[in-house]
Image (tube, rainbow, N blue to C red; front, side):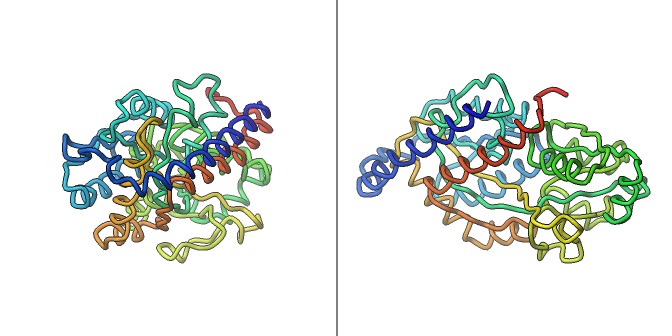
Length: 333
């Protein structure tokens, strides 16, 4: 498994060097765009079900992309297998610049967690841009009896078992809480869900004691009093939730695990189109219509170039792949 991680990292680095040369040429050759994007609507696959953060980010972005590209952008939800099913559908699409996907942090874990993948995470995918990062928030259902992380930690240390839900096995929410529980010696049971919508429904209904999700996902439910925020996973407090402490300041120095979202394309999409889409997404993210909505929900916009996203994904594979291996985390538990 260690060899698998290093092989993926090597492929990321090698392909990144190749693409640097191709991208420089592509920027100078506008003819490489052909008739794009005038021929037909653009399909933007959200790789998780409706109601979660991937779905919401995709829809916010799609609305402004229509203005930037002067073309219809249609969001299609294809959820399942922690984003693999939707990503696989994208990789099987024609690489003509009319199919893209919005992926979540599971994208950097799936190639290590899953024994068999229907696509090659490096060769079959062209990075477009890293949309942004966000804290994840651990929240408690109102009938759990938990009102603070201090209380949760004290009861957990005393041996009381707790169950927490995430958007799926191998999601950053799952891995970050597994890391915390192991570090602290907590007896926590993980309950995987098929996406953020179903997860928050059960958290609101009290079917699960604790839930961990991106700030984008959980903040509306915090604001309306549906769940109780306990702690966030980033190194610094969130401006959107300044009253919520970090895990790092709650007795676990150095803890930092942000959620992230990105736009990707089929691997053989022409570099000129990838770069044009990168520019369109970057412009969209800078407009108040998009940036204000994302920032209000705790997303810090990044909007880097394709090579930056390629490097970022490689580092995520290395970081969380190591944790998955060391802790023998399996796809089905």
